[in-house]
Image (tube, rainbow, N blue to C red; front, side, top):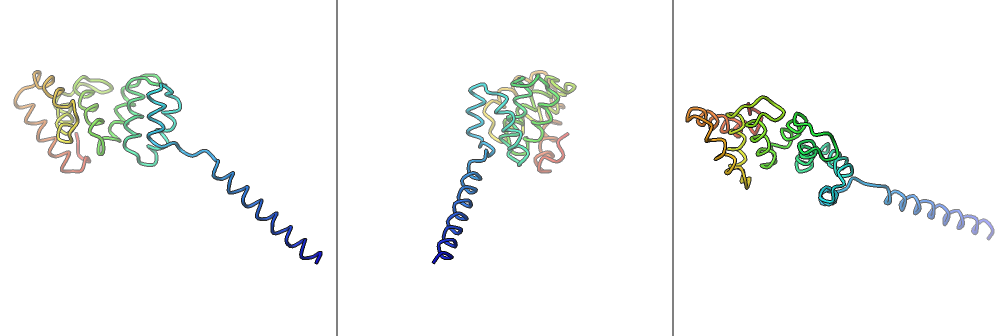
Amino acid sequence: MKKLRVLAFTLIATCAVSFTGMVQAKSQPTTPNVEQLLEAYYAQDFKASLNGFLALSNQGDAEATLFVGRHFFYGFGVPQDFSKALEWFHKAAPDSAEAQEHLGIMYAKGEGTPSDLILGFMWLMIADHNADESAQMWKTVFAKSMTATQLAEAGEKAEMCIGSNYQDCK
């Protein structure tokens, strides 16, 4: 009978330890989801949002990658750095019309890169093709400074970029 009590006590103690370990494992912090990070971003908690977006970006999340670029573009929580923003927008571009729009404006204006109206217009054409809301307006702005030949070249480059699944976009 005494052995049975010891065995029962050991079994109960083992289960309690296992359960405690499960509860602790569940309470470990996890990477926030995009919605939680957007809340932090719009609440101007840029340190938390940048760290979370970086973690999600490293897991392949295009929206998170776009927001890392926005942090660098606007200087939210980090020093403003157009070159780094350009890099992050390039990473997000295959899956983000907004990143494509940012690239178009940055190339056209020469932010973080030498000015290149053709490359900028190409990215704006791609963003417009992918239904970015303001790409058409930006195309109108920059087209006024371009020749018909430049516009045609930008169109050819846009077709090549899309046709290469965003691998040949220069």
